[in-house]
Length: 83
Image 1 (cartoon, rainbow, N blue to C red):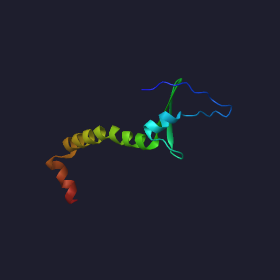
Image 2 (cartoon, rainbow, N blue to C red; image 1 turned 180 degrees about the horizontal axis):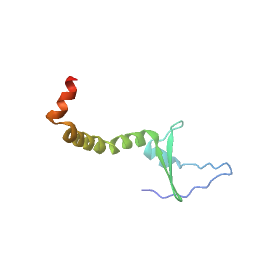
Image 3 (cartoon, rainbow, N blue to C red; image 1 turned 60 degrees about the vertical axis):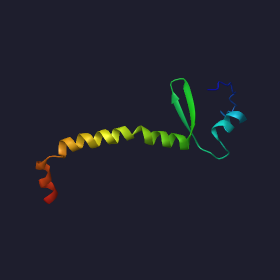
Image 4 (cartoon, rainbow, N blue to C red; image 1 turned 90 degrees about the horizontal axis):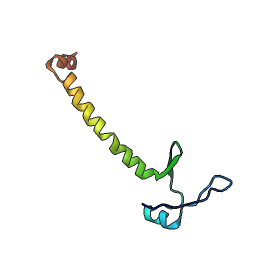
């Protein structure tokens, strides 16, 4: 982890240090996601955030499939397949 101090311009802009950009592969034109929680701000590359969010929901899908198979996996429910 790296801790840096950057200044905010009169337009609200900051400069991300070159070594930080290089270490995460940030290039001109890349999109960032800005997360704000109270007084904290976090920036993350859009691609890495998308991959992270995809993984965050995997457990929900697996759990939902398990629950629904218990609720609707019985022989009584097979009748609906033939209706």
